Length: 432
Ligand SMILES: NC(=O)c1ccc[n+]([C@@H]2O[C@H](COP(=O)([O-])OP(=O)(O)OC[C@H]3O[C@@H](n4cnc5c(N)ncnc54)[C@H](OP(=O)(O)O)[C@@H]3O)[C@@H](O)[C@H]2O)c1
Image (tube, rainbow, N blue to C red):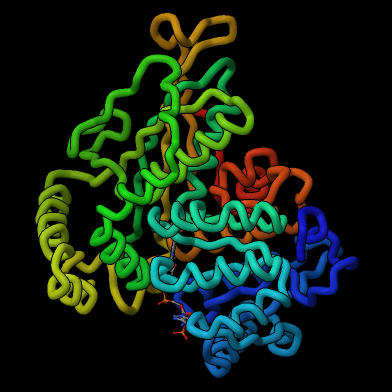
């Protein structure tokens, strides 16, 4: 079994591959393959031993050929192995997991395909990172596999893409930069695109449709953890309304619907319970733009919330993503030009108490503003974040939590150099 520490030593382990990219033929998987190929010199010893995996050998061969051509690295076709594995065939997953230190799992929607991969990793001693933005999947993996992963020394780290690395590590970065006790942070996400606009691939749309349909199950899942309430330290931060004009980012803004609040809260709970760190209250918001964008969003959101409740409505949403999202999601995904013109910006507004001030008395007496910004979120920033998360597991095992388990990025990587790594790869953290 790949216990803590053994994964970093490429020479002492019999496992042939340090990384296996599973779902390498998917829209996102292809970009992850490119990013692994670009980053392979960052592995211990300067060369990464890696393989691609999926259910179709032909598709995987195409991926390697495309990647070799695009990066001008013909050797990839002979040096990178292909592993055939299918989520519906547990033996194939077990065989794959026995061959790798870290599985980079790109097969989603995770609510349908994710659990057998986590199970196979835990049972066969492979660490795993995924790019799920689905709280129900992420939290149920923690509930069901944390103890087993801990006893096997296996690290399962979910949400290592745009969901939710910038938010989760952005809060940790803000806390680390604050001189005193940081007690609350609000983040405001804005996305920019070039003249060709922006677009997200259908895979994420499907995850959102099925995730929203199952919203009620999340509440009952959370009860099973039997968590105590996290203490509110410092002045309580008010939740903002469902739509408001934000002076912080000078545009209309809504609460962020993705996995960030769930992931940040789990991280803050872990840091409080395991390391007695003050939990930071967190509110996540996303900029919508001007009034015309608000009207579009209200219309699309209304239709989405109605249709997602019924099986026939979900079928319609899944069949016509472009129509129901005003072209923002599509089966073809973004073009290269759209990706080149897109970027994201997370602005964090934190408050707390300077050194010597008691957070249980009075109002916060200091503020901090930080930024996390980077390239196109879905298919440029996500592969960067996922690959750097996997490299962190491979190269910094001593800085991971003492025990294996099912972790958020912030819980797994708070003591590692991942922020510096991300910064060096274009996901930049700064104090304003
Ligand atoms: N965190 C983020 O910000 C972020 C960003 C991008 C994507 N994502 C998530 O990543 C996931 C994938 O998205 P995508 O757009 O890349 O979707 P996609 O193009 O549909 O890719 C899905 C992948 O899963 C594979 N697959 C499906 N069923 C399988 C099975 N039974 N066994 C083995 N492999 C199987 C597919 O294989 P075939 O190629 O053989 O069909 C394909 O490689 C989604 O959950 C999405 O939400 C998250």
